[in-house]
Length: 326
Image (cartoon, rainbow, N blue to C red):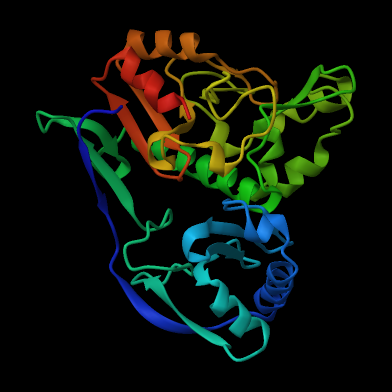
């Protein structure tokens, strides 16, 4: 258990009546029918992603109260979150309800939330302090100038990882593999479309290894978010941490629901101090290798699963491991 306490720096939110998009209403009609039919995924299993369509995912989050949670994705990757009872889903399905009250950030970032205290990955931040009230982690706004660019780039990477999950229903794999199980390409390449790097993504031949003659030509097109001051292109210090207890397990693609330690307390990726790799290579450190890098330098810029970025410092290796494990 992580010691200490934290508080969230939230932007004020105000309630607003929103017209339900037709795509969302259509999906609610499908969900309602599945409830009526007694579909197991809609009536018997608690989950936040068993009910999905192209632009919505969610599920039965409170079986005792027949309460469902859904996230709707707009074409600009902004999200709307809903918490609905079964009778409210029925009302949407039959057309009786066409508007719902949601909560919007004062910055009007484009996202809407089910409650006023929801955390917005675009507008809000988290600060954490240990039991002696000394900083455990620093948010980007508190970082010194030498660290702030790394934090800004890592935040983009974290949001791209989130967008990948929103679109695919799972986090990206550490690497995609061929028929024999040999790693072909890194997760850094797989999230390129969500970094607005479609041009580079389309240059990669994903049927060939990352270091094939054809793909070597892409090495020099390294996205700016992966460029590191302490190593020369095409190498990067942006790495994941591979392990059976991290989100980057090699056995399967993790889902949001597997993260039992909390998305605000689970590291998704880091800006390593000295560890680096070719940005296209499907190679990343394991937990022990990252811990050694952390011990040698006493800090680690990290992006967490919920999208916020912090610099971890002055913590034990055991506590760092807790932040890496789901």
